[in-house]
Amino acid sequence: MRKIGCHISSAGGISKIFDRAKIADAECLQTFAGSPQTWKPAEYSDEDVEKFKTERVKNTNIGPLFIHAMYLINLASPNNQIRHGSINALVKSLMVAEKLGFDGVITHTGSAGSASFDDVLPTLQKSLGQILEQVPANLKTKLLLENAAGAGGIIGGSVSELSQMLKSVGLDERIGFCIDTCHAFVSGYDLRTDAGISRLATEIESDLGWNRLKAIHLNDSKGDLGSKKDRHEIVGKGYLGLESFKKILHHPQFSQIPMILETPDLKSDLTEPPESLVSIRSLM
Image 1: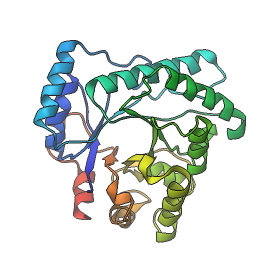
Image 2 (image 1 turned 90 degrees about the vertical axis):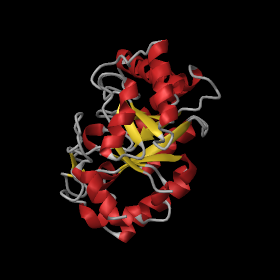
Image 3 (image 1 turned 180 degrees about the vertical axis):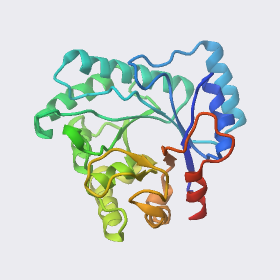
Image 4 (image 1 turned 30 degrees about the vertical axis):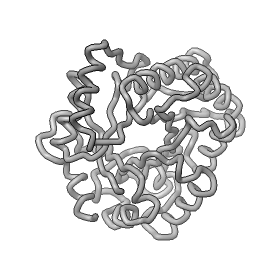
Protein backbone atom coordinates (compact mmCIF):
# COMPACT_ATOMS: atom_id res chain seq x y z
CA MET A 1 0.00 0.00 0.00
CA ARG A 2 1.45 3.33 -1.10
CA LYS A 3 1.88 5.84 1.76
CA ILE A 4 2.94 9.45 1.20
CA GLY A 5 4.01 11.86 3.93
CA CYS A 6 6.52 14.56 4.79
CA HIS A 7 8.86 15.94 7.41
CA ILE A 8 6.83 17.38 10.28
CA SER A 9 8.04 19.82 12.92
CA SER A 10 8.04 18.64 16.54
CA ALA A 11 8.30 22.19 17.90
CA GLY A 12 6.41 22.62 21.15
CA GLY A 13 6.25 18.89 21.89
CA ILE A 14 6.69 15.59 20.08
CA SER A 15 2.98 14.76 20.48
CA LYS A 16 2.08 17.71 18.22
CA ILE A 17 3.36 15.94 15.10
CA PHE A 18 0.07 14.10 14.56
CA ASP A 19 -2.12 17.22 14.36
CA ARG A 20 0.43 18.81 12.01
CA ALA A 21 0.52 15.66 9.90
CA LYS A 22 -3.25 15.84 9.48
CA ILE A 23 -3.01 19.46 8.33
CA ALA A 24 -0.32 18.46 5.83
CA ASP A 25 -2.39 15.46 4.67
CA ALA A 26 0.56 13.20 5.53
CA GLU A 27 -0.06 9.46 5.81
CA CYS A 28 3.41 8.81 7.26
CA LEU A 29 6.02 11.18 8.64
CA GLN A 30 9.53 12.04 9.71
CA THR A 31 10.57 14.47 12.43
CA PHE A 32 13.61 15.63 14.39
CA ALA A 33 14.00 14.65 18.04
CA GLY A 34 16.00 17.69 19.07
CA SER A 35 17.94 20.23 17.05
CA PRO A 36 19.62 18.72 13.95
CA GLN A 37 22.56 21.08 14.47
CA THR A 38 23.52 19.84 17.94
CA TRP A 39 24.75 16.53 19.32
CA LYS A 40 22.14 16.18 22.02
CA PRO A 41 18.85 14.47 21.11
CA ALA A 42 15.69 15.54 22.86
CA GLU A 43 14.90 13.99 26.22
CA TYR A 44 11.29 13.25 27.07
CA SER A 45 9.67 12.93 30.48
CA ASP A 46 7.32 10.08 31.32
CA GLU A 47 4.49 12.58 30.87
CA ASP A 48 5.76 13.48 27.37
CA VAL A 49 5.95 9.80 26.42
CA GLU A 50 2.45 9.04 27.70
CA LYS A 51 1.02 12.06 25.89
CA PHE A 52 2.73 10.96 22.68
CA LYS A 53 1.45 7.40 23.02
CA THR A 54 -2.08 8.66 23.65
CA GLU A 55 -1.95 10.70 20.45
CA ARG A 56 -0.43 7.73 18.62
CA VAL A 57 -3.41 5.54 19.58
CA LYS A 58 -5.75 8.22 18.26
CA ASN A 59 -3.83 8.39 14.97
CA THR A 60 -2.94 4.80 14.11
CA ASN A 61 -3.66 5.60 10.45
CA ILE A 62 -0.55 7.83 10.39
CA GLY A 63 2.61 5.78 10.01
CA PRO A 64 5.23 4.53 9.81
CA LEU A 65 7.05 7.14 11.88
CA PHE A 66 10.71 8.08 11.47
CA ILE A 67 13.19 10.28 13.33
CA HIS A 68 15.91 11.95 11.28
CA ALA A 69 19.19 12.06 13.18
CA MET A 70 21.24 15.24 13.56
CA TYR A 71 23.28 16.50 10.60
CA LEU A 72 26.60 16.32 12.49
CA ILE A 73 26.94 12.54 12.25
CA ASN A 74 30.23 11.24 10.81
CA LEU A 75 30.81 7.56 11.52
CA ALA A 76 34.00 7.59 9.41
CA SER A 77 35.72 10.55 11.05
CA PRO A 78 39.40 10.16 11.99
CA ASN A 79 38.64 12.55 14.85
CA ASN A 80 37.65 10.32 17.76
CA GLN A 81 35.69 13.08 19.44
CA ILE A 82 33.47 13.46 16.37
CA ARG A 83 33.22 9.71 15.78
CA HIS A 84 32.34 8.88 19.38
CA GLY A 85 29.96 11.84 19.46
CA SER A 86 28.24 10.39 16.40
CA ILE A 87 28.02 6.94 17.95
CA ASN A 88 26.63 8.25 21.24
CA ALA A 89 24.12 10.51 19.50
CA LEU A 90 22.78 7.67 17.36
CA VAL A 91 22.55 5.31 20.33
CA LYS A 92 20.56 7.92 22.27
CA SER A 93 18.35 8.64 19.23
CA LEU A 94 17.63 4.95 18.75
CA MET A 95 16.71 4.50 22.41
CA VAL A 96 14.45 7.57 22.36
CA ALA A 97 12.81 6.32 19.17
CA GLU A 98 12.33 2.86 20.66
CA LYS A 99 10.76 4.36 23.79
CA LEU A 100 8.29 6.36 21.71
CA GLY A 101 7.57 3.57 19.24
CA PHE A 102 9.11 5.05 16.09
CA ASP A 103 9.90 2.67 13.26
CA GLY A 104 13.32 3.99 12.31
CA VAL A 105 16.10 6.53 12.84
CA ILE A 106 17.38 7.83 9.51
CA THR A 107 20.99 8.99 9.40
CA HIS A 108 23.66 10.15 7.00
CA THR A 109 26.87 8.19 7.49
CA GLY A 110 29.41 10.99 7.08
CA SER A 111 32.49 11.85 5.05
CA ALA A 112 35.73 10.12 4.16
CA GLY A 113 37.43 13.48 3.66
CA SER A 114 40.43 13.00 1.36
CA ALA A 115 40.47 9.22 1.95
CA SER A 116 38.71 6.61 -0.19
CA PHE A 117 35.63 4.66 0.82
CA ASP A 118 37.73 1.49 1.08
CA ASP A 119 40.11 3.31 3.41
CA VAL A 120 37.35 4.32 5.85
CA LEU A 121 35.23 1.16 5.66
CA PRO A 122 37.01 -0.39 8.69
CA THR A 123 36.20 2.76 10.69
CA LEU A 124 32.57 2.60 9.56
CA GLN A 125 32.46 -1.06 10.56
CA LYS A 126 33.82 -0.23 14.00
CA SER A 127 31.37 2.65 14.48
CA LEU A 128 28.32 0.67 13.40
CA GLY A 129 29.45 -2.25 15.53
CA GLN A 130 29.78 -0.05 18.60
CA ILE A 131 26.28 1.33 18.03
CA LEU A 132 24.81 -2.15 17.73
CA GLU A 133 26.63 -3.29 20.87
CA GLN A 134 24.96 -0.53 22.89
CA VAL A 135 21.35 -1.11 21.84
CA PRO A 136 19.15 -4.17 22.55
CA ALA A 137 19.51 -7.18 20.28
CA ASN A 138 15.72 -7.16 19.85
CA LEU A 139 15.53 -3.44 19.04
CA LYS A 140 12.36 -2.75 17.05
CA THR A 141 13.45 0.67 15.79
CA LYS A 142 15.74 0.27 12.77
CA LEU A 143 18.90 2.26 12.12
CA LEU A 144 18.34 3.44 8.55
CA LEU A 145 21.40 4.46 6.56
CA GLU A 146 20.62 7.08 3.92
CA ASN A 147 22.29 7.36 0.53
CA ALA A 148 24.27 10.57 0.02
CA ALA A 149 24.77 13.12 -2.75
CA GLY A 150 28.47 12.30 -2.88
CA ALA A 151 30.13 15.72 -2.77
CA GLY A 152 33.33 16.43 -0.85
CA GLY A 153 34.21 12.90 0.18
CA ILE A 154 30.68 12.14 1.42
CA ILE A 155 30.22 8.37 1.69
CA GLY A 156 27.20 6.25 0.82
CA GLY A 157 26.58 7.82 -2.58
CA SER A 158 25.93 4.44 -4.17
CA VAL A 159 23.91 1.37 -3.26
CA SER A 160 27.17 -0.59 -3.39
CA GLU A 161 28.71 1.49 -0.59
CA LEU A 162 25.59 1.12 1.54
CA SER A 163 25.70 -2.62 0.94
CA GLN A 164 29.33 -2.84 2.01
CA MET A 165 28.48 -1.07 5.27
CA LEU A 166 25.74 -3.61 5.94
CA LYS A 167 27.96 -6.57 5.13
CA SER A 168 30.70 -5.21 7.38
CA VAL A 169 28.46 -5.81 10.41
CA GLY A 170 27.24 -9.24 9.34
CA LEU A 171 23.94 -8.19 7.73
CA ASP A 172 22.58 -7.21 11.15
CA GLU A 173 18.77 -7.13 11.06
CA ARG A 174 18.65 -3.87 13.02
CA ILE A 175 20.04 -1.99 10.02
CA GLY A 176 17.91 -0.84 7.09
CA PHE A 177 18.06 1.89 4.48
CA CYS A 178 16.48 5.08 3.22
CA ILE A 179 16.90 6.16 -0.41
CA ASP A 180 16.72 9.88 -1.25
CA THR A 181 15.70 10.62 -4.85
CA CYS A 182 17.61 13.93 -4.99
CA HIS A 183 20.77 12.32 -3.61
CA ALA A 184 20.48 9.36 -5.97
CA PHE A 185 20.00 11.64 -8.98
CA VAL A 186 22.91 13.98 -8.29
CA SER A 187 25.18 11.03 -7.52
CA GLY A 188 24.53 9.57 -10.97
CA TYR A 189 21.27 7.59 -11.03
CA ASP A 190 19.18 9.10 -13.84
CA LEU A 191 15.73 8.75 -12.32
CA ARG A 192 14.21 10.64 -15.25
CA THR A 193 14.44 7.46 -17.33
CA ASP A 194 13.01 3.97 -17.02
CA ALA A 195 16.54 2.61 -17.40
CA GLY A 196 17.85 4.75 -14.54
CA ILE A 197 15.02 3.75 -12.22
CA SER A 198 15.49 0.10 -13.17
CA ARG A 199 19.21 0.38 -12.44
CA LEU A 200 18.54 1.69 -8.94
CA ALA A 201 15.83 -0.92 -8.32
CA THR A 202 18.07 -3.75 -9.53
CA GLU A 203 20.92 -2.66 -7.27
CA ILE A 204 18.60 -2.38 -4.27
CA GLU A 205 17.21 -5.87 -4.92
CA SER A 206 20.61 -7.49 -5.39
CA ASP A 207 22.73 -5.56 -2.87
CA LEU A 208 20.32 -4.55 -0.07
CA GLY A 209 17.05 -6.43 -0.44
CA TRP A 210 13.66 -4.73 -0.65
CA ASN A 211 12.86 -5.85 2.88
CA ARG A 212 15.58 -3.50 4.19
CA LEU A 213 14.39 -0.41 2.30
CA LYS A 214 12.12 1.20 4.89
CA ALA A 215 11.70 4.73 3.53
CA ILE A 216 12.15 6.88 0.44
CA HIS A 217 12.91 10.59 0.67
CA LEU A 218 10.93 12.01 -2.21
CA ASN A 219 12.75 15.20 -3.22
CA ASP A 220 13.24 17.08 -6.47
CA SER A 221 16.72 18.47 -7.14
CA LYS A 222 18.20 21.91 -7.72
CA GLY A 223 21.31 20.17 -9.07
CA ASP A 224 21.55 18.33 -12.39
CA LEU A 225 22.41 14.67 -12.93
CA GLY A 226 25.81 13.81 -11.44
CA SER A 227 26.34 17.30 -10.00
CA LYS A 228 26.68 15.94 -6.43
CA LYS A 229 24.83 19.02 -5.15
CA ASP A 230 22.66 18.20 -2.15
CA ARG A 231 19.98 20.84 -2.69
CA HIS A 232 16.35 19.77 -2.54
CA GLU A 233 13.68 21.44 -4.68
CA ILE A 234 9.87 21.55 -4.63
CA VAL A 235 8.48 18.55 -6.51
CA GLY A 236 8.11 19.36 -10.20
CA LYS A 237 10.30 22.47 -10.09
CA GLY A 238 13.72 20.82 -10.20
CA TYR A 239 15.79 18.78 -12.63
CA LEU A 240 13.89 15.58 -11.87
CA GLY A 241 10.46 16.94 -12.82
CA LEU A 242 6.99 15.52 -12.35
CA GLU A 243 7.36 12.69 -14.87
CA SER A 244 10.19 11.17 -12.81
CA PHE A 245 8.03 11.08 -9.72
CA LYS A 246 5.14 9.57 -11.65
CA LYS A 247 7.45 6.72 -12.72
CA ILE A 248 8.61 6.15 -9.14
CA LEU A 249 5.10 6.30 -7.71
CA HIS A 250 3.90 3.64 -10.13
CA HIS A 251 6.96 1.40 -9.95
CA PRO A 252 5.93 -2.05 -8.61
CA GLN A 253 8.57 -2.07 -5.83
CA PHE A 254 9.16 1.60 -5.02
CA SER A 255 5.41 2.20 -4.74
CA GLN A 256 5.28 -0.17 -1.74
CA ILE A 257 7.81 1.84 0.31
CA PRO A 258 6.70 4.77 2.56
CA MET A 259 7.63 8.05 0.87
CA ILE A 260 8.62 11.16 2.83
CA LEU A 261 8.94 14.66 1.35
CA GLU A 262 11.76 16.95 2.55
CA THR A 263 11.14 19.83 0.15
CA PRO A 264 11.60 23.60 0.67
CA ASP A 265 7.83 24.23 0.83
CA LEU A 266 7.55 22.35 4.14
CA LYS A 267 7.11 24.89 6.94
CA SER A 268 6.67 24.34 10.65
CA ASP A 269 3.43 26.34 10.64
CA LEU A 270 1.61 24.68 7.72
CA THR A 271 -2.07 25.58 7.42
CA GLU A 272 -2.71 23.40 4.36
CA PRO A 273 -1.01 20.55 2.47
CA PRO A 274 2.31 21.69 0.93
CA GLU A 275 2.57 22.18 -2.82
CA SER A 276 4.89 19.20 -3.24
CA LEU A 277 2.47 16.81 -1.55
CA VAL A 278 -0.43 18.11 -3.63
CA SER A 279 1.64 17.57 -6.77
CA ILE A 280 2.56 14.03 -5.75
CA ARG A 281 -1.05 13.13 -5.07
CA SER A 282 -2.03 14.42 -8.53
CA LEU A 283 0.30 11.80 -10.05
CA MET A 284 -1.17 8.82 -8.18
